[in-house]
Length: 94
Image 1: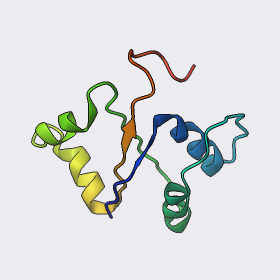
Image 2 (image 1 turned 90 degrees about the vertical axis):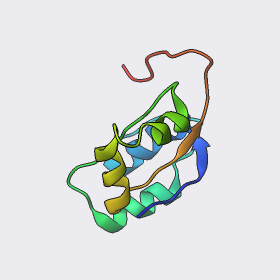
Image 3 (image 1 turned 45 degrees about the horizontal axis):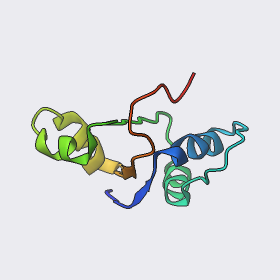
């Protein structure tokens, strides 16, 4: 399954925390579409791929090189283009 909507990268951590039942103080809201998708499938494994600072053009331009990722999305995944939240890359999770 394939969906595309724009959202903020800052929404990913709260969404994962909600799904896994982990308390997280955040001003960002969870992405309900992702939660509905995940709860309806009850996955044993969750794969999160972030193509940070390279953007969606990288994902589409290197389709052949990223064929496994494209296959996961086509098979039963979600794809989101996230808004940039910083002009430089920094560690987001410690």
